[in-house]
Structures are given as structure tokens and as C-alpha cells.
Length: 325
Image 1: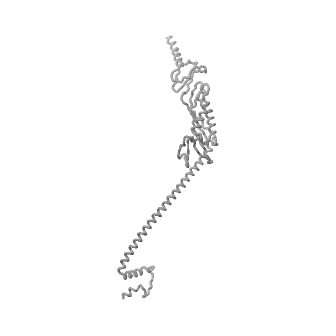
Image 2: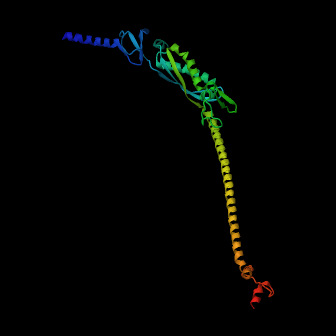
Image 3: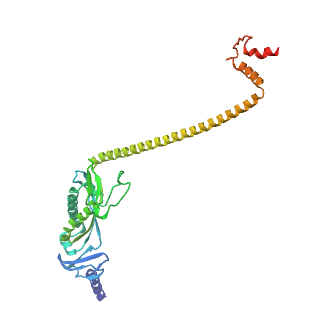
């Protein structure tokens, strides 16, 4: 019984020593062993089970995968004095665990150091370039005669430049573009990060926006520009409308003229035919024709129903009455 009591603590001690002597490196991790603060083993970059001296040596695990850095938006003036908010992001990884441990120790410390490095580089490059360089690509070509977004016409490879207009109407050549500027940011920052055991993989501008004091003027200018374009469209539409109406009136006048001409020809032919028929009919008995016309003139001469007509008995109207006696 006494021997059993003596064995139990020994087994517990062995289990504790065994659990403290081995450590696991997972996939996507790397490890470093230190003894009293000094590195004595590693880095271990392959996944597996490793040994260390318990209680004396410590294990430091670091990510081997890509890590993300997000900076705080900064208010920066561009070279053409446009104040903008710039929001930047980057990707990085730990390439030298020993140097990383000696300089920044933890990921939080690395992020703090990256804040200083990347923010400084971004501020320098933004303030040394025009706003149009930061928001356009070098191979961007605005549509001619309309808004830049209406059409995209890539230029020839030997002329990868975009021509835009500044506020004063002068042309500006986009010589670098946003992609080249971000590559310059990456190159400048990547020169500094290796001393901290960090490799900077990528730097990108997530968002660019005007500061609040400038946004109102920009929006007003955008509204004015849209109103100008709308007025231009309305003017062009009104001109097209007048052209269509003019064509319609011209066509209508032509149709009416042709119809009137045709109607007059029909009436003329009808009158001629009627006259011919009347001539043939009255030619058979001229005296009857004379009588008919005399009676017809008597029926249409008075202007009103109450008119009085005074005739002499010697007039032509009584010629047939005299003959009747």
C-alpha cells in the first residue's frame, strides 16, 4: 500500500514532465525556443511534434500565413492642394521569427510598427502626387465629348497615358496612376520592414474621399455639371423636335398641295364635262335654253325674300309673255 502511494506522485511528475517537454507546431505556424530569454532552438517551420527542456525553455509560436494590416484613415493634402481622406490596407508575414521576437515580440507590436512605417510612406507619396494620379490608372482614357465614364478606349501600348482636364481647363497627363503609386508605397515600406523580421507583401489604397469641407463644393460642382449636361440634352432634344416638326409641316404642305392640285383637276374635268353636256342639251333647242335662263335669272335676282323688283313691260323679261299673247 505504501509503495502504491509512492508510485502515484512519481507517475504524476512524469506526466507533467512529459507534457512540458513536448510541443506541437500546427500547419501555418512556426516556433522558436528560448532559454532564459535567449534563443536556443528553431525556427521550426514544419508542422509536427518537437522536444524542449521543461521549465527552462519556452516556446514562442508565430503565424506563418499572411496577416492583414488596416491603417486608420488619414487626412492628407495632395500636390494640387486637395485635402482627402486616405484609407490604406496591407498584407504581411513573419519571415524571420528570431528577429521578429527580438524587435517587436508580438503581432500587436508589429502592427504598431507598421502603422508608423506605412502611414509615413503613404503620406509622403500622396502629398507628392496629384489627386488625379491617385484615383486613375495610367492606361485610363476618358471618352471624348462626354463624361469620362461613358466610354473606355484603351490607348496604344506605347502611350499608356490618360489626358484629363483640371478645374481651370488645362490638360493634365496621368503618367503614373494609382497602381504605380501603390507599388512605390510597397517598395518604400518593404525596405524598412526586414529589420523587424517582416516581409511586406502588398499595400493597397482601399478608399479615397474628400474631406467634409471640400465635399460640399465638389457635390455642388457635380450637380452643376449634371444640370449643364441635362440642359444640353434638352437643347439637343428641342432642336431635334423642331427639325421633326419642320419636316412634318413640309410634308403636310406637300400632301395638301398635291391633294388640292388633284381636286382642282377633278373639278375642272367635271365642269368641262358638265358644260359639254349642257351645251349639247341646250343646243338642241336654243329658245328653250333662253327661256330657262330667263326664268332662272328671275329666281336668283332678288337678294332677299322681301325684295321688290320693278320691271318695265318693254323689258326683256316680258318678251316671252308678249309672245304668248
